[in-house]
Image (cartoon, rainbow, N blue to C red):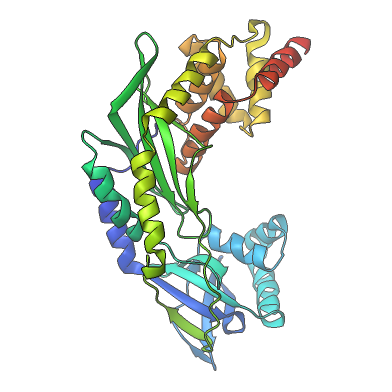
Length: 358
């Protein structure tokens, strides 16, 4: 499992960010994208008066603006990199021609998200306040990895009191991952995970999860620009808070954990066609959207692990997750590792046969 922040470091960062956040509900006719040197800044004008200091934009906000205005991503990126004046002209024209109310989420003077006026702000601070007391009350629970990226917050917690052996000496423990995106890139999600002690791998169990989408009532305030303030987890979300807490408690329940351990033991018996190990890894990578660079690292870990089975391949994927730079991608690979582990026997047999035929 990729190393991230300590629990104390993450709590400090959540608190720091909560003081720097501001959200604005804005009529797009009041927005202007303007180039300065090689950068672009978002201005908010109301009757010719600039409402706040110009905002820088991160790539998430840029992508969401392009998506909202139906500007193809390749063309948007080309204009941004090669002709920012043209991009500003395009964006501003569509802001004016097809006006709408948008939620602009900012952090420390940067526009970090450009979202629908139906977006429901369920922020990291509220999620942390809901789940940390439950996690802290679990006896011997271990915060294995925490992180806050531009796109998501992650809490990965292991419960060493619930463990099993896949094979003698290969011990796994139950855990839970809680994630949330404040910028429209994912719902609040609580998923079980399995932690393998021998190589500190984490595997996200992606077919058993509770979600809450960031969708609420349409906000059509009459003001052109409104400083948008909303209680993170308001009274109408009380039932969801209780559901989060119940799900965190049950995510490490024994029946589900035993099922996954049984799948691991079964995968241990699904042997790989050793006539073309690189071919099987390459085909599996294509099947599950793993890049060529990642595939090379996975092959190396598979050979080093000396376990040429479906179980060994899934572990090679989760082991490689520790090597990638992006924490977001590392977590995706932990989930892909489980998807590979749980693939249908017919798919596994087909991958072996195709590699042999090639």
